[in-house]
Length: 404
Image (cartoon, rainbow, N blue to C red; front, side, top):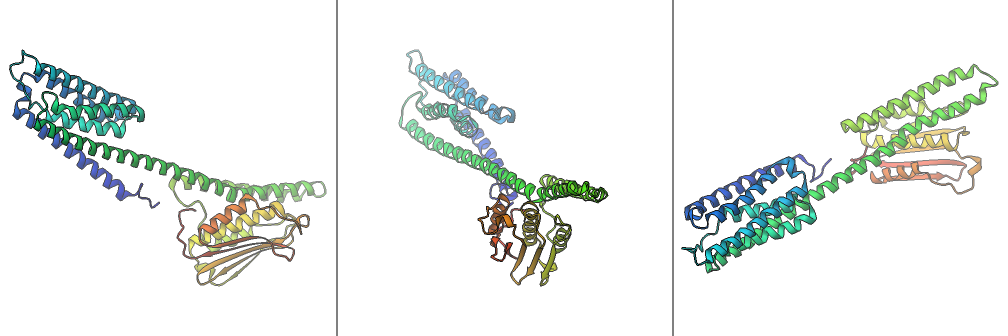
């Protein structure tokens, strides 16, 4: 599957960017801590408030770093909200302590860059991994705490400039976290869409492959019941045919399930020999076989278009058994053209529906969708000569190859 969301190159790129981001964030925290230590913030009169305020985002970062805790979005949002609330409380406490008459020194440079950097990181983690509604309130507290920290002691020119820079840094972190969150949601939505498409494909394959054999079992069982009273010996051969059809149905079902497990194609190999075997095993209620004709180098046809031809033929023969069991003539024509392959299945039109509108079943609708997706042409209906005709032309090179 070629997808920008699930490609190996994209996955490696995301891991590389994540590791680079961790290194950069760690370096920024170390440099901010060194700057705070050099300015003497943690040795000043306001050291208790600064240490307590810096401890809050550190604890929140610890919560975000543990994968088990990060799996609970409400816990991540709660840790971010608690860190923002503690930081705001310490800022108010620091402002009151610095402005009191008992304070010997007013530290307008008590910016605590480490705390500001940590708060911005916690803001990004909260927006990225936190629950939606709680993360809104938590992000607001964290943004206010980061912006107001530089002016907690005193609003000077330097502190106002730093507050403006903190605003820009907070907006950048918030934007990056939102983009990452939306990208993750898009990947999840794409994964759900892929799973839904796989379920629909499996349902169609179940109808096309297993129903073909089950229908044959039902028809043979009905025929055995009719002739059992007059010639019981015939039922022995009918039971053998029923056993063979049931075994084939089980093999087809196992093939489909194994295909889902290994992501292998859910159809037999697209070769002309499989199509010949399919037509050869088909038998009408009266015991007459289907006639198979071929034109051109059919053994050289590519696998992908032949898989679609196989499906069209199988569904058409299944419909003959269901809706026209009394048909006397059934023919399958396969033509290998230079740029396409054609298949035509014809049978006697039932008398009950001759001249009357014929309803199109779900199987034919699925076939038309498949052939159209391959860029081909599909037609099914009476041909005006008392026969039912199914025609499909499929190009040898198609842009659609995701399905089976």
